[in-house]
Image (tube, rainbow, N blue to C red; front, side):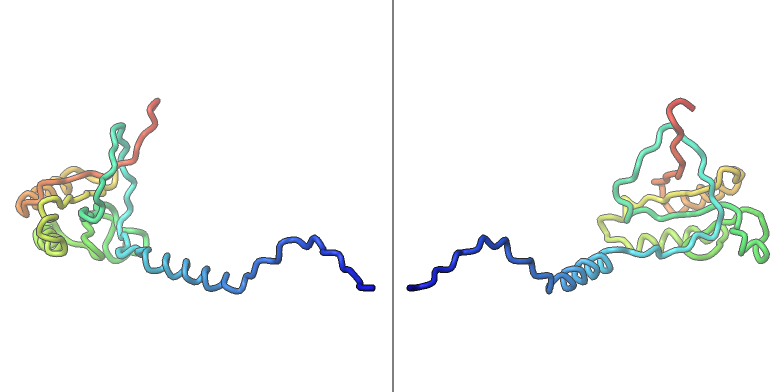
Length: 157
């Protein structure tokens, strides 16, 4: 007589996790390639002024930043506490803005040059004289699209 075996109701076979490390490394590699690191260190203290009407810029790659404020604590021994203008990674005078705008325009394509915006990130306690000097130099450089950075206030304040 033949022995009949019952078919077992086995569950679903376990999922193989052998390729999981490959997937993790592909995702890690993707994020390492697509993420940009901060390319500039801010050397001035900026506590942004408050504004009730704030809008975000759409094309951030067309924005060049000018920082105005007191040097950070580690730089004050060398530069003092007077407000400074930071263009890229170093302090400059208003006379250097013309060259800065020209170099920033050269980085852009021909079609985007007219859409370039200069963002002024000035500390709220910075005197208007230095900001006026910066604006005058921007006019000489024909950089007429200027935006000011501000923090948004709450509606009730």
